[in-house]
Image (cartoon, rainbow, N blue to C red):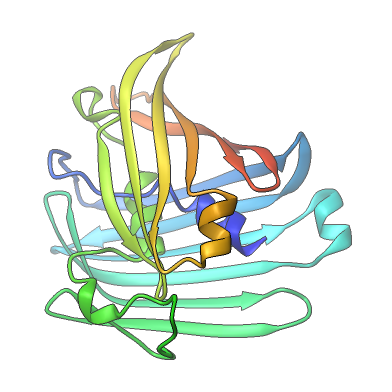
Length: 235
């Protein structure tokens, strides 16, 4: 389930062309895997005076919740200029029902410092990950309203404390009353050879809908996971 969490964080990013206004975000999405209700994802955040704070919760529910009570919570904060996010702190709490864990990252000069980093053959050295954003910062950036000209423009490196990945979003085109984008989440480094052999690229589609003020917001995400096709819909 945790890898699915990371994949749902995929559509996450800031693109230099966006123009972000001060304000708040409060979005809730239902998550289904193979048509089965798997839980919910909630993203909240606000910006003021060039600073941002964001938080999110992914919680199992439906039939999946009957099998495993899983909950991930995360928060981040930092500075923002235009649509360039520079995190200063990231915190994550995981509860799988069997095990609880915590992880934190602070940033010095844009370089992440991981609280519980343990060198290993697979893990990426945080010192080499300057300029990346944490998963929560990426989620907050992704689920905000954008101008029509900025829909489907995405290219961002992410670092979760051990692994580096990349998300690309492109090819906007009409799909009913929404705009559909082609996207790809790719594992880059820090994954085991077994993980890379299993699957290194995860294609997905993201759908924007027009808001009352003429901008666009994410309404749906459809992606392939190791557990089958997953759909995330805004409530």
